[in-house]
Length: 135
Image 1 (cartoon, helix red, strand yellow):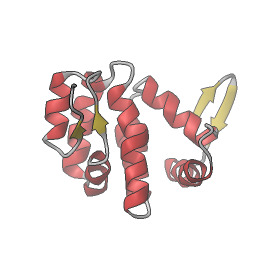
Image 2 (cartoon, helix red, strand yellow):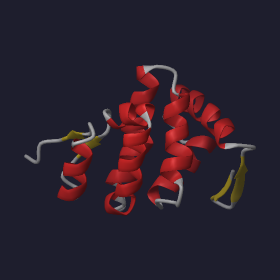
Image 3 (tube, one colour):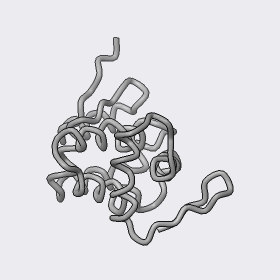
């Protein structure tokens, strides 16, 4: 697995190795580090496979509810909320939530604000995402 961020190529031997690095980074600092920068870029650009390959892996390797909450309120929320990606990834997120209990648990920690389309808000709320009041 690799990505180029700010002219630096980031390389991990596997998605599971990247996921194993993401949790300690997220726990230790609010500053973006390599594994965090990678998932932010992948979510901002809605890179093909980001749901099935990266976010499902994060959810599956999460150690307990707190880490599942990080996945849902962090990169998963960023993916469906930012850059107008919600509609582009909706089918992937719905499928992953139906097929993977850990991903569905992470989705329960995703908050959808008024910047997310009504279609995305409605369908993901039906799978457990939290819809914020529009007021």
